[in-house]
Length: 384
Image (cartoon, rainbow, N blue to C red):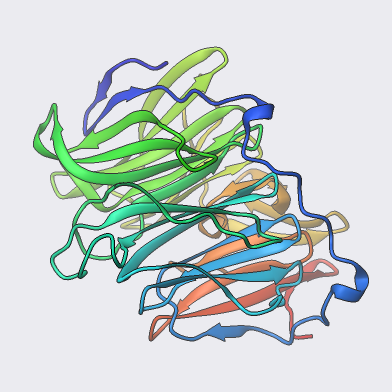
């Protein structure tokens, strides 16, 4: 249990994330691998999903899952193999009048989909309506989704990423952090508020009161990740016209909580873990900026924001400043820590163990999926 604390720009109203042990985690058993006869031929270069709006991409035990909402409000799951090839037709998960953000996480054979929108029959017409946050749980192999469950009313505003975040715990538990409707806080009557929740089975109770601020950035949540048993999350606020991200670190064994301001004047792009170290990537007036958070008890340290990806006999290796880890050891927002020419702003990325997949937004609410593989010491676009 973490008590009531306050830092400039935001308040932790309280946090009580009673994560269960392994036996209580989200997991069904990992899906069985497909036989050789079931694996399709390698795909032939990038493909385009026409008419897709909000989307997210996550690696699964057998490949990857691209979840995207069409402009007409249908939420669909595109199942991909380990080389990025489509396995069958997309599966409908839910329908809405409008969906403006999607977040997806996978662990132990279970996928959680969090989305923000107005659902037909539950919120009426989208015009003038306050959105809500919903979740769907599914098995990526069987694609048998649970019915959409409304978690909370959402905050009003134009479509914007940075209001939903998911994290995977050390035992495979899935946690969510999301913006809910505005309400009072110690800074005033109309604060942006954020709630924590554990995602396991429908009906699970909320596990934390959350965060609040009277001056959120347009995309307030910088991310939510776990590394080395520590849960990190970032909240962006605006002070005197300039952004600042507060990074919180919560450790349960032993219990410890800390918050540190990071990269003032820079707009956050994403939060990821490289091994057990959390890394914040941001866009500063002078160019990219980065900061590292080794643990809940160690102070943040500056980090050279230069990002490089190379290949060796062990597979792709990601270098960020002086840090270097296998790509398989990166969790959270992988696209944020990739070189920007490989994953432009707004992209989502996943490493399947065979291919690096990058989903990139295109004009006209479309998504382009690119595949990359190691060839010798170089990462090359997959055109086979």
